[in-house]
Image (tube, rainbow, N blue to C red; front, side, top):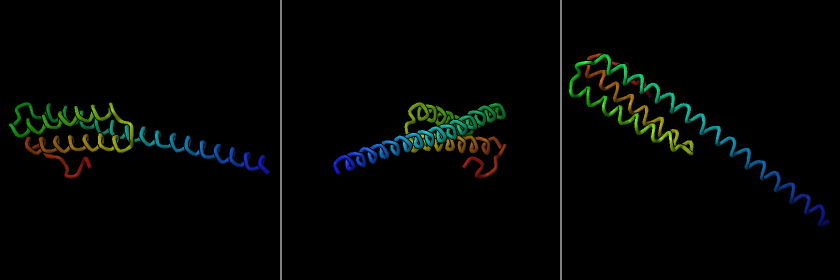
Length: 121
């Protein structure tokens, strides 16, 4: 009787350990996907900053400030990506990059280049 109880207990513990390992692998995969998305938005932000800076060689103070704010968001996104350990942190990095893209849109509007509304959300 005790042998069966011990065998069932060991089997239950092994099942719990396998489930915990599976959930950890799944969580790490979600973090990697979130980081990949944030890095893609970061690349988009970098390209947008470069394009706006090229297109507006003689830009207004408002456009220059908007691009400076976009660059600040790029630096912040880089810092956040360097410290990502959870899905939430990856999401924040992605949102920071999206915020930077909104600043680039503001610079484009100030330069009379314009950009489609809601392009980066």
